Image (cartoon, rainbow, N blue to C red; front, side):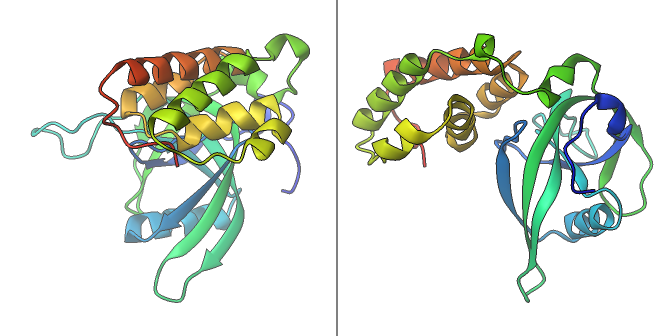
Length: 218
């Protein structure tokens, strides 16, 4: 159980999924979650009893005729690496992102949560270490962060920014960003870290060119 995944063939072909708008999980990044709805408590229980894997995915806006919302086609599977009970019926968990997936058919489930057949064929690179060719334009990312921070009077620990790896910096900013559902999905679906950094900078620049009304990065 406590080992890195080496190949997409090692990943399950069906996943319980947690649809959560504006929530982003990326490969090799960590996402803390506060679980309180009964169906998702059941989902965590089921994951802990098996391979500890949960698929994070964003829902599309629900229409009046839908019994349950449709989902974006791409999400990211994460492993539960931390788990705590709060004593008041909630769980605190942390997911470590492993690999993106594409949903296929939805399965019938009996725990109240949704289960999908999934495939990973286009995302095998998520399991590999980054190479020098994957390096993003770090200076552009930092410049965008600096401009965003100045616009919103944010205090940034620039020493921590300097010490962070390229991947830690880009993924942390993508996850913590206050951008909308479509922008978050674009960050998830970016081909690699270099492209994700470029998308992050482009979105930040568009936000700065607007009225600046969106909440600042946390």
